[in-house]
Length: 203
Image (tube, rainbow, N blue to C red; front, top):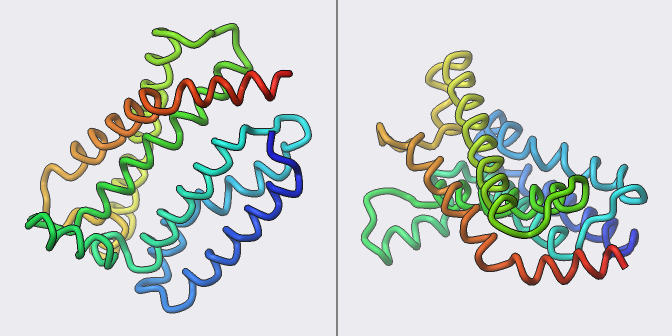
């Protein structure tokens, strides 16, 4: 398992990136909404480390996801330079960084949900765990889309940067599809690696 020091060092690195992402942010209100999960997750991990230490794999994924959120918060998802580069390279109709964010929204929570289910329930690796993890990720994606809808109703036109739809009427459905794909990919690619780390953690 990652040591308390490793967790703190990773959290400090994330905090430094968070501060950098704040300065010069395209829209401060959008920044706060986009990075809110970072402000919640790191204190939670630090507070629960001694009772529920997470695997190194999950720690690394949380750090990566925080970076994805902070980059999107700094530029707003529709204006991230990486997205423009991908848009030009693949001749896409829109900046795809929002899709990357929603892919991560399925990919990283899949390993987090898997870790919780395998350590706190009687579930074992297999079809039921795969199905439940996927369902959890889809539920998280649906809740996030409801939050975006609530923001749009409450803020009106000012929520456009947070929504990042770029005029696509099917943006919500595509976002949830990307989260679903992310959840499937994470489990298909990382399950064995994750199982080895869980075994070492239990030992």
